[in-house]
Length: 396
Image 1: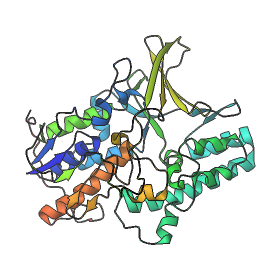
Image 2 (image 1 turned 90 degrees about the vertical axis):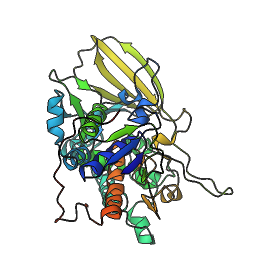
Image 3 (image 1 turned 45 degrees about the horizontal axis):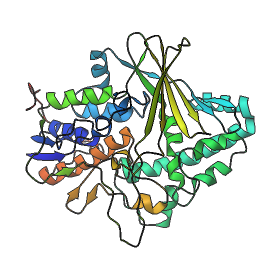
Image 4 (image 1 turned 180 degrees about the vertical axis):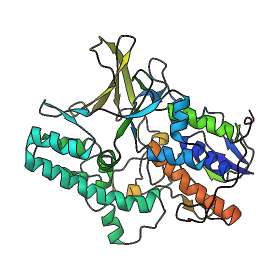
């Protein structure tokens, strides 16, 4: 019997993977609804916080999770009457008052910037993203696909810990420099701008129903909950034992004389209905003057405008840890810390859903090897999943 603690996405993913590997798994939620970061807080109109954004990035992490737990993402989506479709370009309201639609796809992105700001600026933007692509390759080795230790100055350089977001933005000569600066403070390590690389490489996606209307991204969490049930994971409030894998997000302890990485704030949320404008999909607007993001989603013949600011709420580790200095990232709780295994929004991979899924996978590989001696990592080409019989249901 293995016990996973937490109602978080990382905990759900880890429990599903362990069960598919043949382990008897108990998921101890602490009495919190599954999908803790989202379900633990409601917006002002009673909707779950997970309904803030319909955007999904790096869907390959979800595909891998469903495949490694004995299903296929497309099959699960088909069963729910949904499919993944590319999201439209993000509209940026730049500090000079202009608006610019930034596509995610590489070629479209270059053409849009070249048209709006000139070919030289498009080339500068491409070089900046190219630098971030290099950081992404190192980030995968140290946080997503393995836990390679960071021991040298070369490691820190490869991760973008020796440059700042301001350094990246200074390469641009147009109002576009506001885009990387919207992701973190100017003196934060360049690693904080990785989302720009991730979106250009893997795209931005929506779940849409048969009518083409966007659905909440958290539907994926609901489908994962169904996987837990079919795999026979026992979901309880308290397992009554020390967990084998702790997936509760926590701020790391620090010496009293040194400031440590604070938790990211909970988002401040405002919602209001607007008159419909014929919009069929959803639209994301980033306002760089007010430092807010607004998602416009068709709702009952009008538009539901959900505006989010991530700089005003109380700190909450469920939303990850702030990245202000290189030390902040280096001190994030590692997946493997002696005998202790953990995976959460506070792990080195970060708080994004795909990052939590990756952290959970690394923790599962380590735990499975400790218990069985077997190597379930993707690099082990000889590994085969054990035969699995679908459970009728999980225990209440």
